[in-house]
Length: 285
Image 1 (cartoon, rainbow, N blue to C red):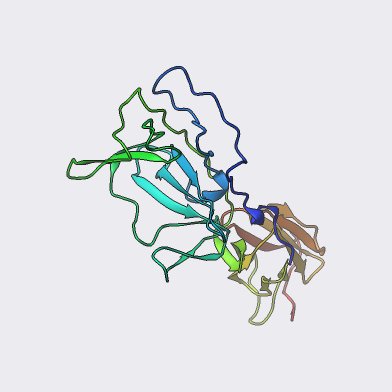
Image 2: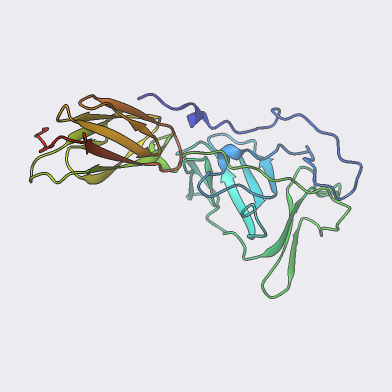
């Protein structure tokens, strides 16, 4: 099975980043490159990116490659997020021993020992104390008003903060070991009423997974772009695609429509009868 290019999910590791100069204006958000920048390939497009994110590379064997601390969401303040990074749709030993980390289709997972704190006023920053090199600093306010700061208190104008990241991962499911993909839903409709067992046409997919020959809806998982082929039963019937791909076929002709990788796309196929003709439907096994 051909795998889409993003399956590789390149993660930035030590030695892959280039240092940037710190802004001379204190408090100005900068990518302070004692650490590599966050990658949009670890943020699913259907959930969005982050307004501020710091990535800490981890030099370990196996699939565990790093961790990120980030503000949840791109608008306002959605609390503090913490995730480990690794190979997409893979499993790695975790901590404490005996636990496992199961990475999702975008190569990230939440630690089993903690969740995203219910904080607000989150700041992701580069610590300045010599005792805290190359770690992600963060500070947030608890609902009771108490402030949590690690590894040091944030003081505006003294520590540089991290910029945001735009979500770029199209995948939403794991279709196999180390194989991320999407779920495509196809609906088949007919513009005329046909008798039971009859059909105005058939819709199939390449790679296989979708097959409809009567009005209805079905879904399947795919690791790559999907080509849908609609074949009418009569020379006076045509297929019209809408949704994640848009195309109108000719009357009596097969029509193909390419569905690009996107977060869980949906396609509707209408079989239309040519004006001035009566389309009774046929059988397609």
